[in-house]
Structures are given as C-alpha cells and as structure tokens.
Length: 379
Image (cartoon, rainbow, N blue to C red; front, side, top):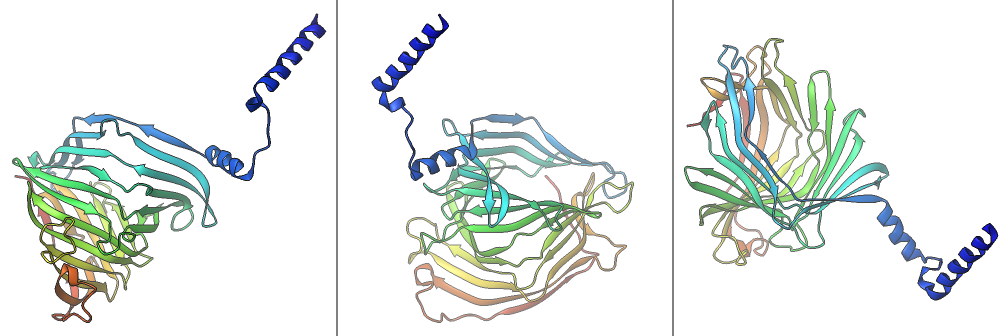
C-alpha cells in the first residue's frame, strides 16, 4: 500500500508540473537573482500612530545652588502621523565605504509634533510644533549608523538630507502663530542643495558625553517665509555651510556631587564657514525674481571657537539660566570671526552680476568672561 501511495503521489506531482509549467523549477538570470538578494537583505517598517503624553517635566532640585527648585514642563505632547500616510522606513545591514553599517532609509516621514505649552516654573513660553513634511519622489532621508565613535568605543552616525526635503515649524502664543518653512533646496540649482552630516560621534567619557560635531561640506538650509498668520515678515538662509572635522560638544555633570544641573564645553574648528543670507519679500515661484532682495555675507572662523564651562540650571526664581563656572578662570567664550563679502542685490542678479559691489568686512575678536549669564523666564 505504501508503494502504491508513493506512485500516486509521484504521478500527481508530475501532472502538476506538466499542467502548470510556471510552477516548475527554472534557472534564474542574474537580474532576477539580484532582485531576490536585494529583497532578502533588509526589512521595511510601516506604521501609523497617534501618541499623546499629558506632560514631561525636568526638575532641578537645587536651582542655582540655593534650594530654589526649578522645573521645565512640556504639556500636552502629541506625536502622530497624517491619516492614511504611514511612516515607512527601510532597514538594511550592509557595507558602506568599507565598513559594516546599519542603514535607515526614509522615503516619507509624515510625522506631526505638537507641544501645547513649553513652561518654565509654570509660566508658558508658548506652544511649539512641526509638520507638513515634504520630500521629492525618488529621494530619501538616509541615516547610517556605524560602530566606533571618536575613540572606537562609541557610535558614529552619517545623516544625508536631500535638497527636496522641507517641513514647517511653529511657535504659538496667545493665539498668534509664528511659522517658518525649513527647506534644504538650492533656489538656483534644482538638482543641488541638501546637507550631508558626516561622522557625528557619541562617546561616554570620564567627563561626560562627548558628541562629535558633524563634518559638513557645502550644506544648505533655508528658513523661508517667516510669518505671523499669513503675513510674511522675511526669510533667511545658511548656504555653503562648511564645518571642519574635530569639533565637539562635551556635556558634563554639575561640578559638585550634591549639585543638580549640567555643564558644557563646545569647540568649533577654525576655517569653518557659511554664507548668511537675509531675504525680503515672500518666497514662492517668483524666487529668485525682481521683487525679492538678498543681503548676504560670508562668516568664517579665523581661530577655533571655544566655549568652556557653560552651565545650565533651572532656578525657581530666575528661570532657565545659562552662566559660566566662576571657579575656573578659563571659563567663557573666545573666538575670532571674519565677516566679509557684504552684498545687497536683487535675487535674480545673484551669481549673474560679475564682481558685485560689497560694503566692507568686519573682523570680530570675541571674548565673553565667566561673569556673563543669560536667563529665560515665562510670562
């Protein structure tokens, strides 16, 4: 009986192969093999969500060391995706520039963020949020994660922002909303723009968390149509952004074991530079055009920009306070900035007029002593 069953099964399988030739095993060509391999290398994460948090609070138990407890509060907080427009992330493990890496690819990131109130000691500075995320068809926001960090024990991140990416960010207070559109495009080159942030590192060290500043070459970000309601005030842009390697932010614990708060050191390497552009007139399809004007200047670091011993505390009476460690004579800010190539032009003449007339330059030697402070309070 077993032999008879096997014969019947063999006959059935043979019949299926004859009757349905598409089910038969066939050799794959190289293109088909590559498609199968590509599909097997990663995974795709798709999600729609609506997350709500009543409040998030940071409490500074000793304020400025005088026992005046301070508090920062975000409430309520909502993080959600647009209806029928899910977040979609492709995740791959592959070799990038000779190193194994974890690669996240976002072809759409329709995330909306709303914070009803950002308050200091119960007094609100207003609500904040962002949304209206846009990215061009075929483009993607790509995040690449490597093992390593600054000294081999942390992590390193590359972030590639395409020129077609944009989103709105806003601040709202007493019913009035101030909005700006962050756009990474190049208005004079549809295929240009964007910003690549390379070698952002994170390392835990003896002094605290060291964050290596990214290396940036010819980056571009625009703050278009800063507006109250529908009334446009102005626009601004940071173009040809170049950040030299070697800079870092070091976030440290408060100096005393019984103190609450944090202290920060910052180093931005010399020869870092950018073009700052102030733009008047509403930005739209008419830009660049005869009714939009630009004032621009190149800002570069002649020497390293150094911030040492900057402290952040939340005090029950003074609010959010930034000051410097007065026990360290080296605390403060130092740097040498060169502001050059001041020009004012019609936006459609930028890059067209040869040798535009400038209005001078400024060489700024900056030093802030450790007696400097800034405090921010709600109302």
